[in-house]
Image 1 (cartoon, helix red, strand yellow):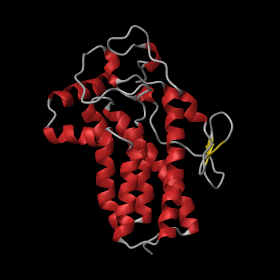
Image 2 (cartoon, helix red, strand yellow):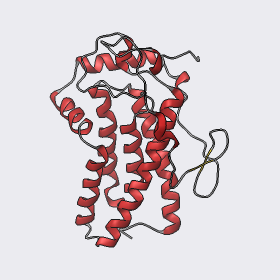
Image 3 (cartoon, rainbow, N blue to C red):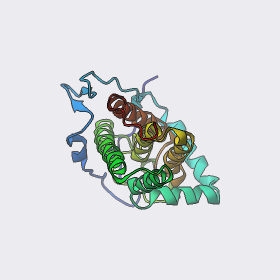
Image 4 (cartoon, rainbow, N blue to C red):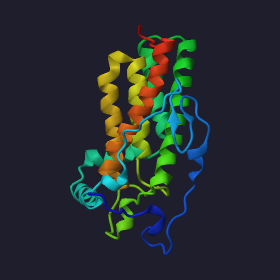
Amino acid sequence: MRTRYRRWTEYPYPGESIPPKGSPEAGNWPMFFISRGRDNDFLDPFHQRIIWRTKNPIDIDWETELFIVEETLKSLTSQQIRIAQYWGTGELTAKITTLIFNLSKKYKLGSPSVARVQAYFHAAMNDTFVMTWFFKYHWDVARPNQYGRNLSTVLFTPRFPAYPSAHATVAGCAEAVLSYIFPQESSEIKKLMEESAQSRLYAGVHFNEDNIEGLRLGRQIGEVVVSLLMVQNLNTLQ
């Protein structure tokens, strides 16, 4: 059943009297692997139209999602709080870049290979942020703190729409790209990236579906990147 959902631009944050105003500009930036067609169509590197798998938020039960946030915040463990704080403070891509350097050292990659891996990773991150911001402002989904429930969150709520979670899209894309480049580490990479996405629920700043669908979107963007890498044979461990 499709129902109207609460919009980010229509409800103030706690303690404020007017709804927030965001900055959607990033959703229009140039991309490296994805190009724009007409009428919000997007094309992969082979000029094929991308059919996005991410749910339309009108198909999500947001009242149930709010209940999940409330129950999660009531029962947070010390470990979950640490996870929320680790992934939610500082620059997320810097943490993943550190992972790349550690894996590059482990597998004794030379400087040219490390530079190439970094180039593809950050270009993929650019496209991920562009698509995330496009969908965030296209769908304009409210945050948990805009439901008047006085949530006691671990971190401050960002001032841009919720859906999909940027932490989750970044994590999903990083998982896909880095698992291709470092296939022997795919299990550990997946575990870390899913933890990063889940951390936003622990922080109280995202609904669970923001993270689930963010991972789905990020992984799909990652698949687009990997499809080109396969043609160029950028697998550093082969």
